[in-house]
Length: 390
Ligand SMILES: *[C@@H]1O[C@H](CO)[C@@H](O)[C@H](O)[C@H]1NC(C)=O
Ligand SMILES: *[C@@H]1O[C@H](CO)[C@@H](O)[C@H](O)[C@H]1NC(C)=O
Figure (cartoon, rainbow, N blue to C red):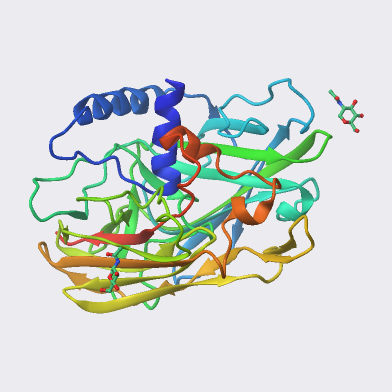
């Protein structure tokens, strides 16, 4: 169970859909276990927010709520006593998991969400402060999203029965299901019987117990709005159809500059790519995304700035990835359209966390579980929000 959950969460957090490959070696078994796990999640304990505020919406006519959850105790770094009711992927971490209660919206068309971990003073908890947000995700276990991307030569791809509603696979913990300038109408319809589970895993590097809170913003229109296309987060993994998965890339031996290219990916459902952004770890330079050979997004990583600059143990300035360009002009796509992504890396210019960290924070706990190898630090994913045409 633990391993499966780890795998599942890695898939959600790192954004890999658990896809059936050809031949489906164990694929059906994994799918069945994931289904069983999803089933068990529906009965987790519900938790009410400490505080619910209505705040200014970003989209005209919408309503935006900020829900605050907690307090959540984090174990001290030097303590071996387990705290929390969830699992942590880091041996120094604390995990919590709860279903949201009735105060969290239901039967709404979600336009945008944003999540954040707050410290004791209700300020954004920061790595400077010794608090590292491994993940903080709100997942909807109600139904499996339809795969938006698949392979030229395979049948329909199977996806796990989970949709990420909030948090997840982006550097910025904001997710927008609606088009930036209302070019198309789309949103994530959250059903009346939604089962939304919040899973958090936070690492405390201080030798004292700490307390954190979760801030979860959700902007929505009431009900299932007629004319709105349903949207979900959908990821493009260069290894979807063949080759290495974009969730754990092994840099080629003795090379610091290299690229990872996808092959054979196609659009699996008519619709719109509402917005898209590359997901890279330290070492990544950019990801170029093409549809039918035409470049539609060049998502470039930005390094450094407040909260993303520190020093290595030998005193060198060490800049970590801050964000990647968001491309938010919706693009209409048709089933069969050819998808191509090309991710570029320069490990000399941007040392990966493990190389640069010199025994500082260890961020690689998850990859050890996934492939048991030290070399797979790099990521290459395109995170999209996809609206399905009817
Ligand atoms: C952890 O470190 C704190 C501060 O140095 C100390 O007071 C405490 O006794 C330590 N706890 C353990 C279990 O070592
Ligand atoms: C990816 O494509 C680019 C441009 O076509 C090429 O230069 C590069 O060698 C390719 N990388 C791999 C790993 O095939």
